[in-house]
Length: 295
Image (cartoon, rainbow, N blue to C red; front, side, top):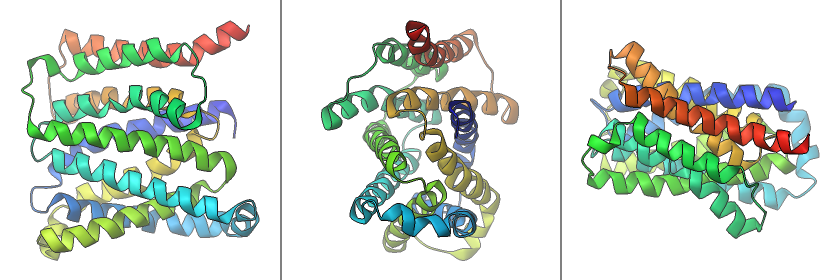
């Protein structure tokens, strides 16, 4: 896959994530957060696993000859990171509003390069840091966080941002060594669905009739976000390292704002528009600065 194709995958993935925020928020009217995630990610697994069987079954044994144990370890780490990130975000939406959740989630942007440096001792290109600052400022303006009240759910979102960071980092590591994006996508969604189901059955009322009331939100968040978008993320990270990937993924807030404007008739003010521009400039700078220096 070319760098251009990876960038397109990252943008499409981020577009889907941004529009899924609405489905995540409205999909808990009749069911709990873990029930929502259990069904959502199982739907994602059902969408991805047949594709993995069709297109990658012949490559699995060949790819795993490199280091089967490492693949299993990384796949489990990715699954747990995705479970904890999505669970904390979903629960947090019960105790905070979408603006706060969207702003604090973007904290994974500065966390990724820091964690990459601490774990792998890899030097970070200087362009990442100004790009991170632009994205955080953009997120602040985009979500109208300056007029929001900090709530207890915000702590959960910040903690979730750490696990979104590790998910991005471990995804970059596994796709670097194992070209099995559909298989990886299927495994991680199954892990999230299984863990969410266990907690949901214990702490929530797992009522099928209530789940069916949220079928549209679950299908959208499951097939497109839980299935397609997370596979696109893996494809994207094949040619884009974790720190620049995190910056591109921060466009999720921009797409979420545009979706809310179109679908929910929410008003875009001048600060929101400047927030979009700051994030866009941050993304462009992170991608163009290394190229300009090379030339």
